Image (cartoon, rainbow, N blue to C red; front, side, top):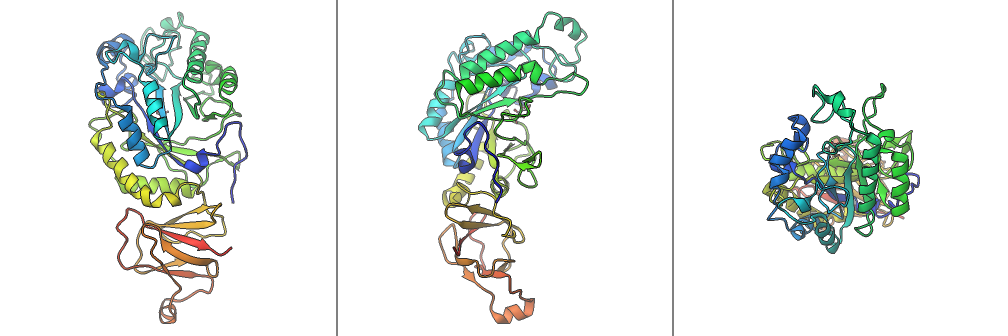
Length: 430
Ligand code: GLC
């Protein structure tokens, strides 16, 4: 069975809990057309402030509702954008005025969120953008940001110092890791070094130093892999694509978490029509765990501070499935190699209970043939209702369709159980 090597942070709870909520919330929620709109539409700082900073008033924001929606979906941790690339801060940072307290919201929005999620039993994660399109010391890139094509870009850069910005970054991360109790995850985003020296990476963030600050303040925090450091991170974070197997780094398995969206963008997007169905999202979660990974599923709350109905609908649907099938997700991982995945299925395995879970993505005619499983299973049941599943193919049918001594055939009910993805729980022989 694959087992990643130990890293500095504490990932023991993380690889058990498997499922978390990503929250992208900032001024861009009001633009409601992608969290990168400042870049996409090349909106200058003053104009962005005029439109959105001056009007940010999430009057319906109730973090208890958010936390209860996440807990109800079976999520065990959350990661929220304390600041995204636009530079706006949700908390009362001492080193900037560009924060929620100075908008019509008039208050720190992060503290009550952390409290609410903790009260619902979820662990706390902070996403923090390395990139900052608002800060006046941040060097303007030729390919990223609202000023990328600006005629005076180079002239503007003369008054800027990336080193000063890196100090600001360090001060903010220090606040986040000091003022909110135990932080379980720090999710820095992102580095884009280019071979010709343009772009930004560890030198521009002063990552080595930042790393020391992080570990000094919260030694156990799980750190993601986007600081452009070869060592020290705990988790790889593929986004918007499902890995084809356990994620590897230098040929070795690592702790990993896919982060995925409902509809494409991370921030609230009013007109996006490409919403994934509840079933697709459940498949995605299963797929992650079957490859030894986690899923961080994103919601972009609205400018009034709500999860919109499309998100609530998916979260409720996932929760409905998780209530009965959490056992095949929590504490589970990729099955040992000796168990071959049957057609149209995903396997997960709980190494403590030694139970194997067969997620049946397409319900077969009657029989599910498990090659190599003969003699290895003591009992089988459907997870949704603990109803027994028959083992073995009768000789009449075995003669007709061909039988293999190594194969165990599960005899399934004709009607697919009325759940998004039926799961068969296999009690293995010890
Ligand atoms: C990207 C994007 C961003 C999003 C993040 C989540 O790097 O810049 O908008 O926050 O991925 O993984």
